[in-house]
Image 1 (cartoon, rainbow, N blue to C red):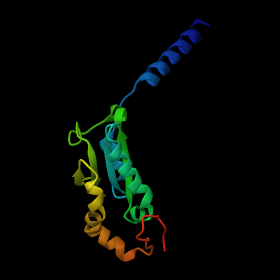
Image 2 (spheres, one colour; image 1 turned 135 degrees about the vertical axis):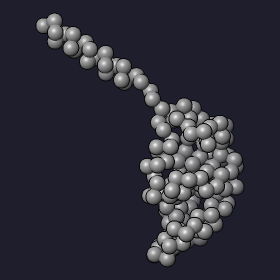
Image 3 (cartoon, rainbow, N blue to C red; image 1 turned 90 degrees about the vertical axis):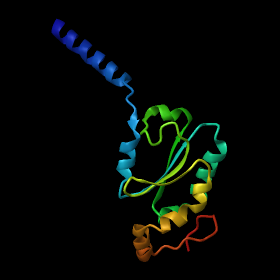
Image 4 (cartoon, helix red, strand yellow; image 1 turned 45 degrees about the vertical axis):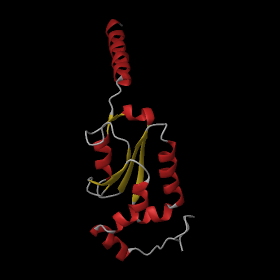
Length: 149
C-alpha cells in the first residue's frame, strides 16, 4: 500500500509540474510549419494599435477570395499574447505587418497598413506566384465583397 501511494503521489506531482510549465511557443517553428504551404501575413501589434489590427482583419475578411488565391494566411500576435511566444530577434520589440514567403523569409514589412496596399503587387511579382496564376482557374471579383465569379 505504501509503494502505490508513493507512486500515485509522484505521478500527481509530475503532472502538476508539467502542467504548470509554460514554455513559450517558437514563432520560428510556427512560421516553418507554413513553409511551402502558405504565405504568411504576420501582424504583431499592441492592443492600442486598433487601426492596424482592424485594418488587417478587414483586409482579410473583405478580400477573402483574393487572399485565398494568393495562398495568404493572417497570423496575429496582439498585446499580451506576445508573452506566449519565443520571438526571434528579427521581430523582437518591433510592431507592424510582415509578408513572409513560402521559404519562410521576410519579403516586406511596414509599421502601418501601407504593406497591405502593395501586398498583391509584391506577391504577384514572385516567380512561384506567376506559375500559380497560370494554373489558377478561380477569378475573384475585384469588389471587396469576397465573391468569386
